[in-house]
Image (cartoon, rainbow, N blue to C red; front, top):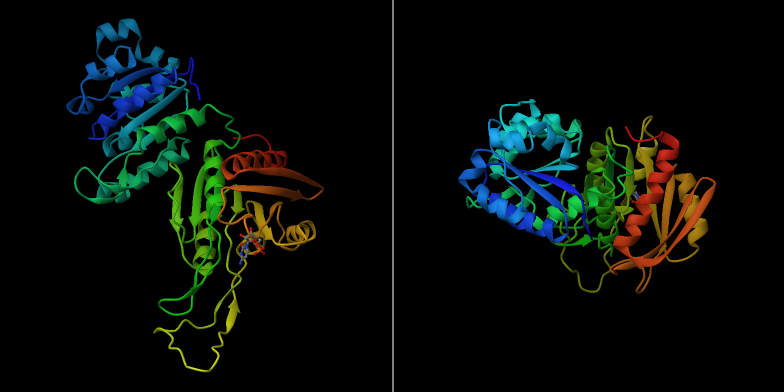
Length: 403
Ligand code: C5P
Protein backbone atom coordinates (compact mmCIF):
# COMPACT_ATOMS: atom_id res chain seq x y z
CA UNK A 1 0.00 0.00 0.00
CA UNK A 2 1.49 3.32 -1.02
CA UNK A 3 0.09 6.81 -1.49
CA UNK A 4 3.34 8.17 -2.88
CA UNK A 5 2.82 11.66 -4.36
CA UNK A 6 -0.93 11.49 -3.69
CA UNK A 7 -2.32 14.80 -2.49
CA UNK A 8 -4.98 14.58 0.20
CA UNK A 9 -6.71 17.53 1.79
CA UNK A 10 -8.31 16.83 5.14
CA UNK A 11 -10.97 19.17 6.46
CA UNK A 12 -11.29 18.88 10.23
CA UNK A 13 -14.48 20.25 11.76
CA UNK A 14 -15.64 20.79 15.33
CA UNK A 15 -16.20 17.45 17.01
CA UNK A 16 -14.46 15.41 19.67
CA UNK A 17 -13.43 12.83 17.06
CA UNK A 18 -11.01 15.50 15.74
CA UNK A 19 -8.36 13.98 18.00
CA UNK A 20 -8.47 10.79 15.91
CA UNK A 21 -7.48 12.73 12.80
CA UNK A 22 -4.01 13.18 14.29
CA UNK A 23 -3.59 9.43 13.96
CA UNK A 24 -5.06 9.45 10.43
CA UNK A 25 -2.62 12.12 9.26
CA UNK A 26 0.23 10.09 10.74
CA UNK A 27 -0.92 6.89 9.01
CA UNK A 28 -1.29 8.68 5.65
CA UNK A 29 2.20 10.12 6.00
CA UNK A 30 3.47 6.58 6.69
CA UNK A 31 2.16 5.73 3.21
CA UNK A 32 4.05 8.74 1.76
CA UNK A 33 0.91 10.77 1.01
CA UNK A 34 1.15 14.55 0.89
CA UNK A 35 -1.39 15.79 3.43
CA UNK A 36 -2.68 19.29 4.01
CA UNK A 37 -5.12 20.12 6.77
CA UNK A 38 -7.80 22.79 6.76
CA UNK A 39 -9.64 23.33 10.05
CA UNK A 40 -12.87 25.06 10.84
CA UNK A 41 -12.85 27.55 13.68
CA UNK A 42 -14.80 24.99 15.76
CA UNK A 43 -12.18 22.30 15.21
CA UNK A 44 -9.49 24.47 16.83
CA UNK A 45 -11.37 24.13 20.14
CA UNK A 46 -10.55 20.41 20.11
CA UNK A 47 -7.06 20.16 18.55
CA UNK A 48 -4.61 22.95 17.80
CA UNK A 49 -3.39 23.78 14.29
CA UNK A 50 0.16 23.29 15.59
CA UNK A 51 -0.54 19.58 16.16
CA UNK A 52 -1.65 19.06 12.56
CA UNK A 53 1.17 21.22 11.27
CA UNK A 54 3.71 19.01 13.04
CA UNK A 55 2.06 15.80 11.84
CA UNK A 56 1.49 16.84 8.22
CA UNK A 57 4.71 18.81 7.84
CA UNK A 58 2.65 21.56 6.15
CA UNK A 59 1.12 24.82 7.30
CA UNK A 60 -2.46 24.44 8.51
CA UNK A 61 -5.13 26.87 7.34
CA UNK A 62 -8.20 27.92 9.31
CA UNK A 63 -9.39 31.26 8.03
CA UNK A 64 -10.39 32.41 4.59
CA UNK A 65 -9.04 35.83 5.54
CA UNK A 66 -5.50 34.73 6.41
CA UNK A 67 -3.32 37.00 4.23
CA UNK A 68 -0.14 35.04 4.77
CA UNK A 69 -1.84 31.74 3.99
CA UNK A 70 -3.52 33.14 0.89
CA UNK A 71 -0.16 34.48 -0.30
CA UNK A 72 1.48 31.03 0.15
CA UNK A 73 -1.31 28.83 -1.27
CA UNK A 74 -4.63 30.56 -1.89
CA UNK A 75 -7.94 28.81 -1.37
CA UNK A 76 -8.39 28.16 -5.10
CA UNK A 77 -4.87 26.76 -5.40
CA UNK A 78 -5.54 24.54 -2.39
CA UNK A 79 -8.75 23.30 -4.03
CA UNK A 80 -6.87 22.56 -7.26
CA UNK A 81 -3.95 20.95 -5.41
CA UNK A 82 -6.14 18.30 -3.76
CA UNK A 83 -6.70 14.94 -5.46
CA UNK A 84 -9.05 13.89 -2.66
CA UNK A 85 -10.88 15.95 -0.06
CA UNK A 86 -11.86 14.16 3.13
CA UNK A 87 -13.91 15.97 5.75
CA UNK A 88 -13.47 14.17 9.04
CA UNK A 89 -14.97 14.45 11.51
CA UNK A 90 -17.87 16.05 9.65
CA UNK A 91 -20.15 17.81 12.13
CA UNK A 92 -23.90 18.19 11.56
CA UNK A 93 -23.31 21.90 10.97
CA UNK A 94 -20.64 21.34 8.31
CA UNK A 95 -22.82 18.73 6.59
CA UNK A 96 -25.69 21.26 6.48
CA UNK A 97 -23.47 24.00 5.12
CA UNK A 98 -21.99 21.73 2.44
CA UNK A 99 -25.46 20.53 1.44
CA UNK A 100 -26.56 24.11 0.92
CA UNK A 101 -23.42 25.29 -0.84
CA UNK A 102 -22.24 27.82 1.74
CA UNK A 103 -18.90 29.50 1.15
CA UNK A 104 -18.43 31.50 4.34
CA UNK A 105 -15.31 29.81 5.64
CA UNK A 106 -12.20 28.30 4.09
CA UNK A 107 -13.30 24.66 4.15
CA UNK A 108 -16.74 25.19 2.57
CA UNK A 109 -15.17 27.44 -0.08
CA UNK A 110 -12.51 24.85 -0.93
CA UNK A 111 -15.20 22.17 -1.28
CA UNK A 112 -17.08 24.33 -3.81
CA UNK A 113 -13.88 25.13 -5.68
CA UNK A 114 -12.46 21.62 -5.98
CA UNK A 115 -12.90 19.17 -8.84
CA UNK A 116 -11.54 16.34 -6.66
CA UNK A 117 -13.82 13.63 -5.23
CA UNK A 118 -15.12 14.71 -1.82
CA UNK A 119 -15.66 12.29 1.08
CA UNK A 120 -17.44 13.04 4.32
CA UNK A 121 -17.03 11.04 7.53
CA UNK A 122 -19.90 12.11 9.83
CA UNK A 123 -19.39 12.10 13.59
CA UNK A 124 -22.10 13.15 15.98
CA UNK A 125 -24.47 12.10 18.73
CA UNK A 126 -26.80 9.30 17.60
CA UNK A 127 -29.92 11.42 18.11
CA UNK A 128 -28.46 14.18 15.96
CA UNK A 129 -27.43 11.69 13.25
CA UNK A 130 -30.97 10.27 13.18
CA UNK A 131 -32.55 13.73 12.88
CA UNK A 132 -34.48 14.14 9.60
CA UNK A 133 -32.67 17.42 8.88
CA UNK A 134 -29.26 15.71 9.03
CA UNK A 135 -30.51 12.75 7.01
CA UNK A 136 -31.97 15.07 4.37
CA UNK A 137 -28.66 16.93 4.10
CA UNK A 138 -26.76 13.64 3.80
CA UNK A 139 -29.21 12.63 1.07
CA UNK A 140 -28.44 15.84 -0.85
CA UNK A 141 -24.69 15.23 -0.61
CA UNK A 142 -25.05 11.58 -1.62
CA UNK A 143 -27.06 12.45 -4.73
CA UNK A 144 -24.41 15.02 -5.59
CA UNK A 145 -21.78 12.25 -5.62
CA UNK A 146 -20.13 12.99 -2.27
CA UNK A 147 -18.88 9.75 -0.68
CA UNK A 148 -20.45 9.25 2.75
CA UNK A 149 -18.07 7.19 4.89
CA UNK A 150 -19.88 5.72 7.87
CA UNK A 151 -20.80 6.54 10.53
CA UNK A 152 -20.32 3.39 12.58
CA UNK A 153 -22.40 2.11 15.49
CA UNK A 154 -21.12 1.90 19.03
CA UNK A 155 -20.52 3.87 22.19
CA UNK A 156 -20.09 7.57 21.85
CA UNK A 157 -17.99 10.16 23.68
CA UNK A 158 -21.21 11.67 25.09
CA UNK A 159 -22.13 8.36 26.75
CA UNK A 160 -24.84 7.36 24.26
CA UNK A 161 -24.75 4.19 22.23
CA UNK A 162 -25.87 4.17 18.60
CA UNK A 163 -25.04 5.23 15.10
CA UNK A 164 -22.89 8.34 14.72
CA UNK A 165 -19.35 7.27 15.63
CA UNK A 166 -16.75 8.38 13.15
CA UNK A 167 -15.02 5.53 11.31
CA UNK A 168 -11.67 4.64 12.82
CA UNK A 169 -8.51 6.22 11.36
CA UNK A 170 -7.34 2.93 9.81
CA UNK A 171 -10.74 2.50 8.09
CA UNK A 172 -10.55 6.03 6.69
CA UNK A 173 -6.99 5.40 5.54
CA UNK A 174 -8.03 2.15 3.77
CA UNK A 175 -10.96 3.89 2.08
CA UNK A 176 -8.69 6.68 0.83
CA UNK A 177 -6.25 4.09 -0.50
CA UNK A 178 -9.11 2.27 -2.26
CA UNK A 179 -10.34 5.55 -3.73
CA UNK A 180 -7.13 5.76 -5.77
CA UNK A 181 -7.74 2.29 -7.25
CA UNK A 182 -9.88 1.52 -10.29
CA UNK A 183 -13.20 3.23 -9.55
CA UNK A 184 -15.08 1.25 -12.20
CA UNK A 185 -18.41 1.56 -10.37
CA UNK A 186 -18.12 5.19 -9.33
CA UNK A 187 -21.56 6.82 -9.20
CA UNK A 188 -23.36 3.45 -9.33
CA UNK A 189 -25.71 2.07 -6.71
CA UNK A 190 -25.15 -1.56 -5.79
CA UNK A 191 -27.28 -3.72 -3.49
CA UNK A 192 -25.80 -6.93 -2.07
CA UNK A 193 -27.60 -9.56 -0.01
CA UNK A 194 -25.57 -11.82 2.25
CA UNK A 195 -25.78 -14.55 4.85
CA UNK A 196 -28.49 -17.08 5.67
CA UNK A 197 -32.14 -16.52 6.51
CA UNK A 198 -33.76 -17.93 9.65
CA UNK A 199 -37.29 -19.22 9.39
CA UNK A 200 -38.85 -19.39 12.84
CA UNK A 201 -40.60 -22.57 13.96
CA UNK A 202 -41.45 -21.30 17.42
CA UNK A 203 -40.00 -18.58 19.70
CA UNK A 204 -36.78 -20.55 20.26
CA UNK A 205 -36.23 -22.69 17.15
CA UNK A 206 -35.66 -21.90 13.54
CA UNK A 207 -34.65 -23.44 10.22
CA UNK A 208 -31.43 -21.89 8.95
CA UNK A 209 -28.42 -22.78 6.85
CA UNK A 210 -24.64 -22.69 7.09
CA UNK A 211 -23.96 -19.53 5.11
CA UNK A 212 -21.50 -17.34 7.07
CA UNK A 213 -22.13 -14.20 5.00
CA UNK A 214 -18.40 -13.81 4.38
CA UNK A 215 -18.59 -13.93 0.60
CA UNK A 216 -21.42 -11.38 0.44
CA UNK A 217 -19.68 -9.06 2.91
CA UNK A 218 -16.47 -9.30 0.86
CA UNK A 219 -18.45 -8.54 -2.32
CA UNK A 220 -20.03 -5.47 -0.65
CA UNK A 221 -16.58 -4.20 0.42
CA UNK A 222 -15.15 -4.82 -3.07
CA UNK A 223 -18.06 -2.93 -4.71
CA UNK A 224 -17.44 -0.05 -2.29
CA UNK A 225 -13.73 -0.07 -3.20
CA UNK A 226 -14.76 0.12 -6.85
CA UNK A 227 -16.49 3.41 -6.01
CA UNK A 228 -20.10 2.19 -5.73
CA UNK A 229 -22.63 3.40 -3.20
CA UNK A 230 -23.39 0.06 -1.52
CA UNK A 231 -26.35 -1.21 0.52
CA UNK A 232 -25.85 -4.57 2.20
CA UNK A 233 -28.95 -6.50 3.22
CA UNK A 234 -27.67 -9.00 5.77
CA UNK A 235 -29.28 -12.08 7.27
CA UNK A 236 -28.31 -13.12 10.81
CA UNK A 237 -24.49 -13.19 10.78
CA UNK A 238 -21.83 -12.13 13.23
CA UNK A 239 -19.69 -10.02 10.91
CA UNK A 240 -18.74 -6.35 11.21
CA UNK A 241 -20.22 -3.99 8.62
CA UNK A 242 -17.61 -3.04 6.01
CA UNK A 243 -16.87 0.66 6.65
CA UNK A 244 -18.63 2.97 4.24
CA UNK A 245 -21.37 0.43 3.43
CA UNK A 246 -25.02 0.97 4.51
CA UNK A 247 -26.37 -2.13 6.20
CA UNK A 248 -29.94 -3.35 6.67
CA UNK A 249 -30.35 -6.35 9.01
CA UNK A 250 -33.08 -8.92 8.41
CA UNK A 251 -33.91 -12.38 9.70
CA UNK A 252 -36.36 -14.22 7.46
CA UNK A 253 -36.60 -14.67 3.69
CA UNK A 254 -39.74 -12.54 3.58
CA UNK A 255 -38.01 -9.71 5.47
CA UNK A 256 -35.06 -10.01 3.08
CA UNK A 257 -37.44 -9.89 0.11
CA UNK A 258 -39.00 -6.63 1.33
CA UNK A 259 -35.67 -5.03 2.26
CA UNK A 260 -34.00 -5.98 -1.05
CA UNK A 261 -36.91 -4.75 -3.16
CA UNK A 262 -36.94 -1.43 -1.30
CA UNK A 263 -33.14 -1.02 -1.57
CA UNK A 264 -33.11 -1.96 -5.27
CA UNK A 265 -35.41 0.89 -6.20
CA UNK A 266 -33.26 3.04 -8.52
CA UNK A 267 -30.18 0.86 -8.09
CA UNK A 268 -27.89 -0.30 -10.90
CA UNK A 269 -26.74 -3.75 -9.78
CA UNK A 270 -28.12 -6.39 -7.42
CA UNK A 271 -25.83 -9.18 -6.25
CA UNK A 272 -27.77 -11.92 -4.48
CA UNK A 273 -25.11 -13.66 -2.39
CA UNK A 274 -27.54 -14.59 0.38
CA UNK A 275 -28.48 -18.21 0.94
CA UNK A 276 -32.20 -17.57 1.12
CA UNK A 277 -34.31 -20.30 2.74
CA UNK A 278 -36.56 -21.84 0.10
CA UNK A 279 -39.23 -22.83 2.66
CA UNK A 280 -40.59 -21.61 5.98
CA UNK A 281 -42.86 -23.28 8.52
CA UNK A 282 -46.47 -22.78 7.40
CA UNK A 283 -47.33 -21.49 10.90
CA UNK A 284 -45.03 -20.14 13.55
CA UNK A 285 -46.06 -21.50 16.96
CA UNK A 286 -46.68 -18.79 19.58
CA UNK A 287 -45.15 -20.97 22.30
CA UNK A 288 -42.27 -23.39 22.42
CA UNK A 289 -43.35 -26.72 20.87
CA UNK A 290 -43.44 -29.52 23.42
CA UNK A 291 -41.96 -32.93 22.81
CA UNK A 292 -44.54 -35.68 22.67
CA UNK A 293 -42.82 -38.94 23.65
CA UNK A 294 -42.96 -41.67 21.05
CA UNK A 295 -44.55 -39.71 18.23
CA UNK A 296 -42.86 -37.98 15.29
CA UNK A 297 -43.28 -34.25 14.76
CA UNK A 298 -44.42 -33.13 11.32
CA UNK A 299 -43.68 -29.60 10.18
CA UNK A 300 -45.53 -28.28 7.20
CA UNK A 301 -43.39 -25.99 5.09
CA UNK A 302 -44.53 -23.37 2.67
CA UNK A 303 -42.51 -21.83 -0.15
CA UNK A 304 -40.72 -18.51 0.29
CA UNK A 305 -40.74 -15.85 -2.43
CA UNK A 306 -37.77 -16.00 -4.80
CA UNK A 307 -36.20 -12.57 -4.32
CA UNK A 308 -34.02 -12.42 -7.38
CA UNK A 309 -36.77 -13.81 -9.63
CA UNK A 310 -39.15 -11.16 -8.22
CA UNK A 311 -36.62 -8.47 -9.21
CA UNK A 312 -36.21 -10.00 -12.67
CA UNK A 313 -39.99 -9.73 -13.15
CA UNK A 314 -39.97 -5.95 -12.61
CA UNK A 315 -40.15 -3.88 -15.81
CA UNK A 316 -37.09 -1.80 -14.84
CA UNK A 317 -34.73 -3.88 -12.79
CA UNK A 318 -31.04 -3.65 -11.91
CA UNK A 319 -28.36 -5.84 -13.49
CA UNK A 320 -28.92 -9.12 -11.68
CA UNK A 321 -26.17 -11.38 -10.38
CA UNK A 322 -27.15 -14.58 -8.60
CA UNK A 323 -25.11 -17.14 -6.73
CA UNK A 324 -25.55 -20.87 -7.06
CA UNK A 325 -24.14 -23.07 -4.32
CA UNK A 326 -24.26 -26.66 -5.48
CA UNK A 327 -22.99 -29.99 -4.21
CA UNK A 328 -22.98 -31.55 -7.71
CA UNK A 329 -23.54 -30.85 -11.42
CA UNK A 330 -22.44 -27.24 -10.99
CA UNK A 331 -22.54 -26.19 -14.65
CA UNK A 332 -25.94 -27.54 -15.62
CA UNK A 333 -27.68 -26.33 -12.43
CA UNK A 334 -26.06 -22.88 -12.67
CA UNK A 335 -26.91 -22.41 -16.35
CA UNK A 336 -30.45 -23.57 -15.70
CA UNK A 337 -30.82 -20.98 -12.87
CA UNK A 338 -29.38 -18.24 -15.07
CA UNK A 339 -32.13 -18.85 -17.64
CA UNK A 340 -35.00 -19.77 -15.34
CA UNK A 341 -34.56 -16.81 -12.97
CA UNK A 342 -33.83 -14.31 -15.77
CA UNK A 343 -30.37 -13.33 -14.43
CA UNK A 344 -27.61 -11.41 -16.19
CA UNK A 345 -24.85 -13.41 -14.53
CA UNK A 346 -24.51 -16.28 -12.08
CA UNK A 347 -21.55 -17.10 -9.84
CA UNK A 348 -21.50 -20.79 -9.04
CA UNK A 349 -19.48 -22.54 -6.39
CA UNK A 350 -19.24 -26.02 -4.99
CA UNK A 351 -20.29 -26.46 -1.40
CA UNK A 352 -19.80 -29.39 0.90
CA UNK A 353 -17.43 -30.39 3.73
CA UNK A 354 -14.60 -27.78 3.76
CA UNK A 355 -15.88 -26.08 0.59
CA UNK A 356 -17.83 -22.86 0.16
CA UNK A 357 -19.58 -22.23 3.48
CA UNK A 358 -17.82 -21.24 6.73
CA UNK A 359 -14.35 -21.11 5.13
CA UNK A 360 -12.17 -18.14 4.15
CA UNK A 361 -11.40 -19.36 0.61
CA UNK A 362 -13.58 -20.12 -2.35
CA UNK A 363 -13.54 -20.69 -6.11
CA UNK A 364 -16.20 -19.41 -8.51
CA UNK A 365 -17.40 -20.21 -11.99
CA UNK A 366 -19.14 -17.32 -13.72
CA UNK A 367 -21.78 -17.86 -16.41
CA UNK A 368 -23.65 -15.33 -18.50
CA UNK A 369 -25.53 -15.45 -21.77
CA UNK A 370 -22.90 -16.53 -24.26
CA UNK A 371 -19.88 -16.86 -21.98
CA UNK A 372 -18.28 -18.29 -18.87
CA UNK A 373 -15.11 -17.96 -16.82
CA UNK A 374 -13.41 -19.70 -13.90
CA UNK A 375 -11.95 -17.83 -10.92
CA UNK A 376 -9.72 -20.39 -9.14
CA UNK A 377 -9.54 -20.89 -5.35
CA UNK A 378 -8.36 -17.88 -3.37
CA UNK A 379 -9.26 -15.75 -0.35
CA UNK A 380 -12.90 -14.60 -0.51
CA UNK A 381 -11.77 -10.96 -0.31
CA UNK A 382 -9.57 -11.33 -3.39
CA UNK A 383 -12.19 -13.40 -5.19
CA UNK A 384 -14.79 -10.71 -4.46
CA UNK A 385 -12.52 -8.06 -5.98
CA UNK A 386 -12.18 -10.09 -9.18
CA UNK A 387 -15.89 -10.86 -9.26
CA UNK A 388 -16.74 -7.15 -9.03
CA UNK A 389 -14.31 -6.46 -11.90
CA UNK A 390 -16.14 -8.98 -14.11
CA UNK A 391 -19.59 -7.79 -13.06
CA UNK A 392 -18.58 -4.19 -13.83
CA UNK A 393 -17.25 -5.24 -17.25
CA UNK A 394 -20.49 -7.02 -18.21
CA UNK A 395 -22.67 -4.29 -16.69
CA UNK A 396 -20.80 -1.45 -18.42
CA UNK A 397 -20.78 -3.25 -21.76
CA UNK A 398 -24.58 -3.03 -21.65
CA UNK A 399 -24.96 0.40 -20.05
CA UNK A 400 -22.12 2.55 -21.36
CA UNK A 401 -19.53 4.40 -19.26
CA UNK A 402 -20.17 5.79 -15.79
CA UNK A 403 -22.09 9.04 -15.43
O1 C5P B 1 -31.39 -21.18 -3.74
P1 C5P B 1 -30.89 -21.05 -5.15
O2 C5P B 1 -29.75 -21.96 -5.45
O3 C5P B 1 -32.01 -21.09 -6.16
O4 C5P B 1 -30.26 -19.57 -5.20
C1 C5P B 1 -29.73 -19.02 -6.35
C2 C5P B 1 -29.82 -17.52 -6.29
O5 C5P B 1 -31.17 -17.13 -6.06
C3 C5P B 1 -29.00 -16.85 -5.20
O6 C5P B 1 -28.45 -15.67 -5.76
C4 C5P B 1 -30.01 -16.53 -4.11
O7 C5P B 1 -29.64 -15.36 -3.36
C5 C5P B 1 -31.26 -16.29 -4.92
N1 C5P B 1 -32.50 -16.64 -4.21
C6 C5P B 1 -33.41 -15.65 -3.96
N2 C5P B 1 -34.58 -15.94 -3.30
C7 C5P B 1 -34.84 -17.20 -2.91
C8 C5P B 1 -33.94 -18.24 -3.17
C9 C5P B 1 -32.75 -17.92 -3.81
O8 C5P B 1 -33.15 -14.49 -4.32
N3 C5P B 1 -35.99 -17.46 -2.29
